[in-house]
Length: 170
Length: 402
Image 1 (cartoon, helix red, strand yellow):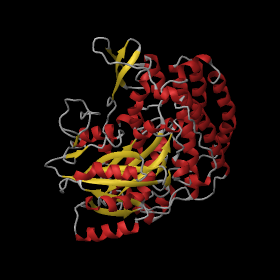
Image 2 (spheres, chains in turn yellow, brown):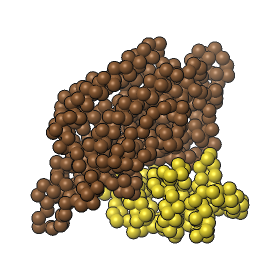
Image 3 (cartoon, one colour):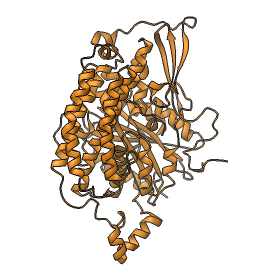
Image 4 (cartoon, rainbow over the protein chains, first blue to last red):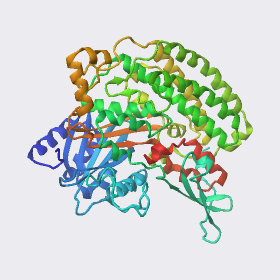
């Protein structure tokens, strides 16, 4: 099973990927202003992925937005159960000017499944964060309306978690 | 138009004055099962809260239990008005994970059928949108042409709506012999038919009064709220993934991207009609330049063999058996592939853990995000304009709820 945990080889990869992407304004701005928040970086199949520490996601989004990545395309989550950290909250950000995409990931422990909401940076995150809350049970601090969106209010459980059976509970 | 954007009608939310009105999920102009909870002050809308999820079937969860190739028919059911766009986006994402080269003929067929799908979807939108605003005739005209497109889909894929025609590695079947003639005949007739619809609507004073200056959305708001596709371009943002981040050889086709700065329902109507004309152009180019050759990638461990090969060659039979019973392993990784669907940016986020089943499939559907803009479009406006605004974002609840 592939796990997004961070090790020594990851540190080497982080530095080489950041070095080869200094031309990217978001990478440049992040390494200058908040380099400690980048935990790992990956460049795979022409897609750049940066893993960000959980506390810094709002600050990172502000920097990324200011550097020209103006459009939040998608927010979603991956459950790596039974590995820890369990949840990978994933942000897909698009730049209309650069015609390029950037993926930000935040790893979230099962014990405290919560991330700060980025609705203050991109209001578009509103529905997506509610969807993740609904289907994965990850809470978003500071979200204006943290309620279920697709499932009924009285529904028990979070169906996209890997320990939830496909056919549901009977 | 700018003064309308900056100075909406002033409304003071006053508990004693306002009332809550429930619109949908059975309201005919909510296109399926959208429920809007409206707070109104007389005829003026104070607050709009969309309530969605009535069609939620857990497709993302279902995908995790299927082989990669078995997910294709599930994708049709998400946006049932543009099934081929879903097929295309999913196949492109998996092909990106597999790093698979697709033959030219398959790519051209994909472009051709994607554009027919766009026409199909826009025709349904035009018909139902006009019907919402009181022009019933357009609906009948649009469905006449849509019927021919669906017949072509039936001939090509064996299905009118849930086509599943694009497969991982190419397309499922060689199109029938009369395919080119039928499509050419349809494409030749369409510009005239689009003139006919415009004749009914573009100069129609009732339609103009119901749409001009209604459902305003500025470019900044559109970007902040994740709006894509025709509503984004109608707000003056010149962005089309087919041109700006081309996929499936769209870079080889010449077409214009219509943009409007009017930001209202009318602009979205004008823009979609112009987009239909561009789609006819792209489809004609794809038909004229349709190359000969294979329709499936040369990857025997991924693409099912032809029936004849399967019944005559040992290896082909083994591959067929293996693919059907065990699926094929996809290298581990995460990809996000986006295409310009009829409604905007459709994206598939596929995570593979190296097995034959996707670890996670997430669909970024355009109207899910666009629906968030409904409040900006409707607040401070009349109740009747909500119908026009909802129609103008072209919602399909299947893709919002998944």
